[in-house]
Length: 343
Image (cartoon, rainbow, N blue to C red; front, side):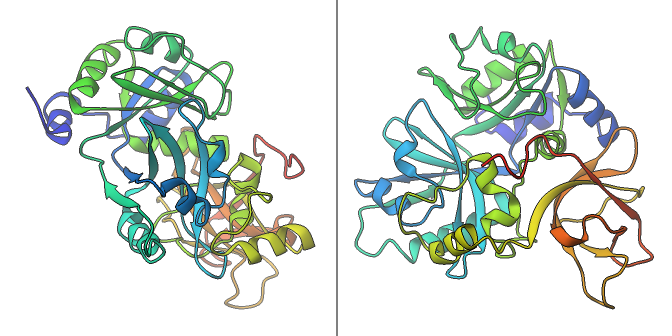
């Protein structure tokens, strides 16, 4: 019996290496993928809820064993150190965030624990993280968990599995679920579902997040953006009524005074070479050396170039945009699945 998830995947389930093929399947087929590039932290203790309420952008009191939420932690300047999904199970709270932000996030949070009864630990090796998406995703999970709730951000759980429904471009037709479970139960699920669904890599999940307009920052963009620049309030990741949290004054001022100059847009970049997160965008009429935005996430578009989520100066979105400099690949702004006026 395997007790190491990484070893199991290496020995039994190698996905296709072609990102274009992977993402074509993500668009059109039932898929299953390992989400190890996202780590899982547990926050436990008698003071866990009150501690998080003073640090997270969203209202922690709305999280229970039936409801998850997107949220973020900010520095004193209101810039996001990390954003993540928060959920609760068996009285403990769990965060799913990009793995390269774990150390930085734990260090930041520990600075505020003081005398609170709170413990933070990386449990990624014990709580395996899997993604399943597609027209038949719900039915693929039924042998393992019944009565799955398909409302966005909802949680369905039993003794063995935690299943969270997350937003997709066509949520009603092609639902997406993130599953958390032990190594033993992950293997049981993987072996059954992978017989009926395409095995893809985690880049395809990132691609689906891009299509749904859900940005997850990484180490290259940490502490670069206030939550609204990444549309966090539009995807239910910020509460403006919960009270104080670190960086709250700046976040609230931007909300109430309406001085937001940047937003997160979906774009396509006309290039054969994959851009990097944090790469800069430039507008045609920008002053020399002045960029108009930066890439948060980027993955191969099956038809042409690369799709990305990028924070861009609102005033420049009607201009001609380029990657890296005015001689770089052309950037085209695409439509998001939600409106900037939706909140």
